Image 1 (spheres, rainbow, N blue to C red):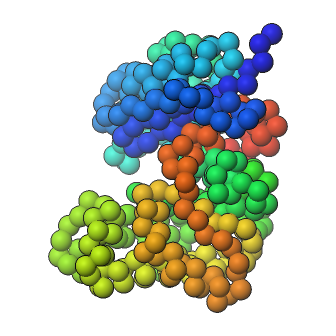
Image 2: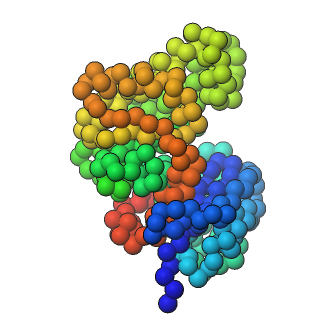
Length: 311
């Protein structure tokens, strides 16, 4: 019997899929197995599944079927991670997949329909990836966040997500927690920057990249990043006191501007005696893909399978 030490990992983004074959014995993406395909998230169920399969089939063919244990998905919510059922509704993407069981319906589009499929939240997958092969490697406790369209997050201890415990936030993440006049997701995401920049300048922009470019010529715009960093630091003080992570790893599009807000983020932590190191993830989009590949490591799967959220 062949040793199945390869997992196809994939990251389902809002408008793309990234997949690759990962050798889980050595923690390495196999050369030439990476596939990136753009996805129309407004398309029909059949078109979306066909497009996902286009990338996955490329990675499967490169890896060689006899060595593949299965396919791990880094999947955005709302999603039933145990059953594989997509619950995308009212979030303006992949709505044609609402109530579709991906585990049951995707295989007919795959060159290897017999491969088992497993699912993990995309932010959790990112956290697992950076803790395994990225900046969090070697740290006992890691907090990983993704700053972009939304505020993704996860706690990691010894490589494994911590979801239900007294020293972590409810659900093992932060986006839903009350903050100021709303929730954390309102303040630590692209829409905060876009909204504040429009208030400041009267100009509408699509994302944080444009705001960061404007910061070079404007002290007022640079102050937006300082405010963002300070708010994020203040928010994390009580949580990092409870869960003293060795490192806070930041990913997502906003992480590219860490040089503009990192100092302001660090200051409230230092003032409160928190020594957590802060770093942007160098793995970028590969992090979630790498994390999802661990779903077919037996020891890892045994630790996480019972804590996968229903949604």
